[in-house]
Amino acid sequence: QLQLVESGGGLVQSGGSLRLSCVASGVDFGEYTVGWFRRAPGKEREAVSCIDNIGDSTMYGDSVKGRFTISKDNAKNTAYLQMNSLKPEDTAVYYCAAFRLLQPLCVIIDTAYDYWGQGTQVTVSP
Image (cartoon, rainbow, N blue to C red):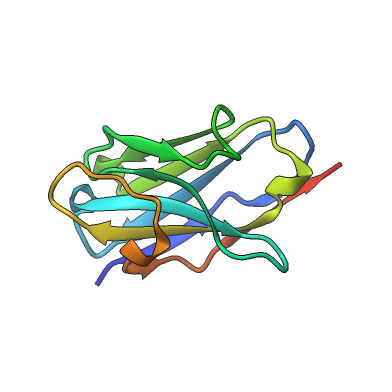
């Protein structure tokens, strides 16, 4: 059973950076596509980014393109989300998610994901 644990959230000023980590346990992470999603207070869950099982193909939501970078280290069973030029509107709980797929495919549709972490809070002050 895949378990995902996010870390790296916190409070940062506008324009700052954070790197989120998502550690997987119990499986070969190289068999899983990974996505990052976020939910801001009073808003629906939003797709942020995804990366395919081998770390080759990526996608980004329009609101984070050019500022966020997703990566994956299968040897460490860890995925990352590097967030630069943060804005107050990036404030949200960020979730790591995964689904098993033995081919390089990345989708940022939350219903595709079977496994979810508990989330990590990111707060960006003006």
